Image (cartoon, rainbow over the protein chains, first blue to last red):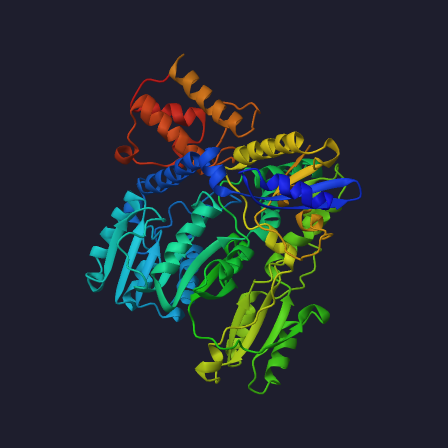
Length: 512
Length: 83
């Protein structure tokens, strides 16, 4: 038995370990550990902390509605609590309106007739979608938000008898029968969940209540693959001119470490096809908002298709955008030359992120004594390479194409893929699932940050090191142990997983 | 310990719990200034509810009321004394 296999066997004996992989690089031994969530929750005590976290978010939402402006909010547009990460001031109501309407525009084509919404809040989506439904069940844990929602519904007679409101936590699906709804909506909610295991339980329940051919729309998810550029953009915005690169770097790490909301990689949702057999397809949609803000840049929607009949996927040939860096005019000419076939473009640069990514690259190589002023000075010289997703959608629509977008490839530069389906295509073609470019295997190692779990995961690491010292010769005790969400299974005993983890914030690391 | 000192001690403990041991003045913006986040504001709310009997459902809530030691004391003064 190899040294790595022996170490893995020892680690698997610890109740806090669900799976592990050990790799050797020269003399260094690194262990990647997928934790047993139940151990962290029940033995180390995170479940108590998790309940506390949910309680705190509930209180925040209640408190927000105690604001004196709540009563005077327009029907369907209660923007209280929507503050910019950059300025910490309220986001302009018009941007929130666009955020709502672009989200609704993504949901309505799913044709919801009997819908269940988790975390309906004050009803910004409900009030726009329910009129299209026969029945709309709306659940939320905030008493004050639901009180506000009930007041609004009373002003809309057409919703009477059609909308049912339930005060409950996200995990509570009691009373909703199996396969009884066609659409579950969970929009801008999952970031408040305490853990991946909680989210998975919510989605397990959601899959259970959705009938064949239905959908689960998990909207407005904070993207883990873009967490660093987002953190950097906020830190740079708030920095004084004289703040140094060293200070900026430290603030970025601190911001990421102290993040209290759950930030998820699209890879998590894509993995649900394996976990839930009824999920026949998963799509990852970058936002299509016209506004360029933190929501349109750094969030996405995940759509789970439940038991959809799909004997085959749409065969699409993808052209690599990076080879030519096509402009919109180039794409216009290209589309005009197509003759009714579905065509794809992959790795399209995302112009919304050009500046942030370029500045982050400069920060990485800058001298520690350089200043925010110097970085900002370089900003103006950043070339815009990419294409705004919204511009691409509008271009395609104008030329008679339905434009589908995807972030399933989980690229850290935020580039996306597009498929252009001629609007004249029969529904049997236009509705086929698309074989989107997928992430490289290493991206599946980390699904989410673990807000509030730092203390518990460090405790687990301490236990694992002690366990290894007790059960292994000193020379075989790993040099470092990283907690990850999933392992790459290449079947290669000498697989090098270290590159997949890379960097302090990609997983919780501890050196012996 | 007078009310202002208690409030300051509570907020200081909150900051230290987040790994922030930098000093702060009574007038410094903590929430809008970014040193504390919304979820931290809940801790302050619970503290004020328990310690001073403040009912935010009754008086209304605005994060600016909790943004600094001075603001919190001013809030408490509407329902209790604050030195």
